[in-house]
Image (cartoon, rainbow, N blue to C red):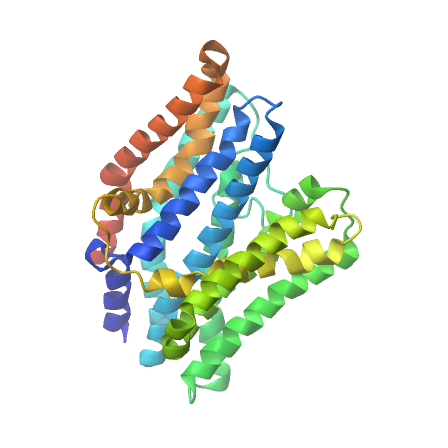
Length: 377
């Protein structure tokens, strides 16, 4: 089973076995995140544009959560269903995840520390927490390296989910692995819906900005978004006929529902202050479901189209490096030393260009070699 887990992980992650639809989803997500952070350099009087860009950035991260859950869910379920799900299997899963995520993260964390202390010159709140992904575990995200908030959510999910499955096996056995896997993930999902309910009855928020800081960006309220993707992975592998036959209906209804959720709440005046249960408990989980609705159709789109397909796949490949570099490194330096000299238009061009170039360099010279090391150890 250990060997099979490693083979399955490689098949999902190697370039020759890539699913173009999922690459498209990942590429769209990172482009949306980059567009979302343009608001830092655009004029403040571009109110409508800034609002729409912020929405794109928010949606981009939510897409990453669901997609990440879907990918790790397929790996975990196949390992779970293949044989004895042991501690060694969990270690192998974590080794492969961490070789993919941790080297880049710690390198860019150190770079952010250098920029903060010796270039921009500001104090870092709770620096030690960043080395353990605890910077936003139970409370708001500090100002330093703010884009790392979502990485804390994902890393905690990488730890929690396989160990939850391991605990389930040790307690209940594996007489019916399919149902046990689903029940375990649903239980974890319910746990994090529960944390949001507790938050609702113990915390009052004055506006959407506070909601964004104290709930949306805090680990203990967000792991259900990853679980949504994992549940979709289970459906794709165990209810494949239903998954395939309903793909168009799911996509269209999900997109419609997502648009209704986002713009309908604004149109109807559903505010954080007056409708806190909706915003705290309902909105984010339902948005994850809406995003997940496009997975059946995108996961079936395997063949890369001629022309535009290749650059989309490449953006997907370097998306993790782009996420780490674009804000705390590239945009922060441009905002501090370039924006006032050349204006927002040239700064925006430099932002996209430098992010693409530095991310490609990081991917080819560090991320990819480090990821390759996991197969040698």
